[in-house]
Length: 127
Image (tube, rainbow, N blue to C red; front, side, top):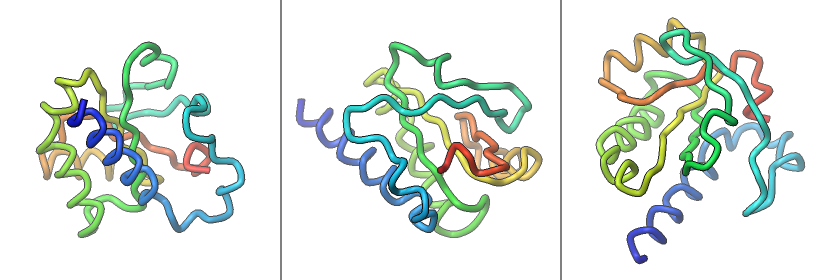
């Protein structure tokens, strides 16, 4: 139970840190416990992912502003390094940024990121 609480607290922190520069979208954010808005985005391999694909699973979604920058790399590698802890809790990890698919592919390969990085090119999901 303690580990689960720490995991949830960590997720809340990560979600809170991601895209803090998009303050204009604050009013549209879902409340704690409310379902996240639907989305459908492509990953670094070109595969489509919809939030509905993960219905019934824990999903750790983190938003980051730019591939291969110091803070975003640290964040992504932290998820990579803790992927087994998330998996043990039954959680799937999804990273979302406004970068192009080709940039995300390079980023995922460079740091051996074993989870989907989704391209939100128009920024609508981040909002």
